[in-house]
Image 1: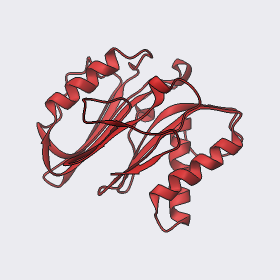
Image 2: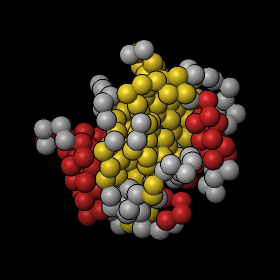
Image 3: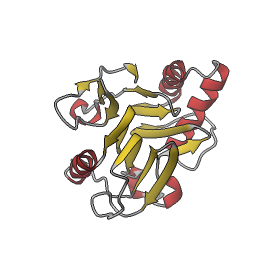
Image 4: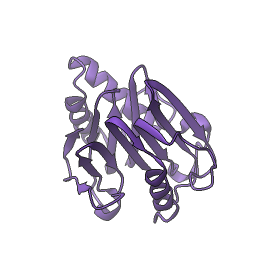
Length: 211
């Protein structure tokens, strides 16, 4: 039930207004987004990261004014449990970064990971490794597996970055106003849990975008 944002561009873009809008939307969300947050960004070719258990709208940490890749995740922990810094996203492995927004119950799979989101990331990576690194197909394959092995999927929204592209998939079974992902694909490529401005388009349920 979290909120996330991924943005990239070929040229550096300003972050202040984007982050202010995202923070405000997290603070005003119908579901509590205050179990900490995490971010990763690339500036001048160098990746940096930050994680905190402070709600994103209270944390005074400043991300650089201009970056060319930005990933932000505000956490709403399932049943208010597992609130530790290690469970904050984005999760990383080599060049890949992962964020998740959703809820699954009765999952009949044994998968490595501390929490459900980390297990979903593991499944995506496993699927990508079996399919020559194709993350778009890996998202669809992972979704199909989880739908078949879960009692109920409230939502399964994921986004993965590989340092060059953003891959996102939207899937939900209820609350479309809350769970529909939105994206823009122009000079700045972005996917977000809700639109930051009028340039965003709603994703269809079951749609994958590569940005």
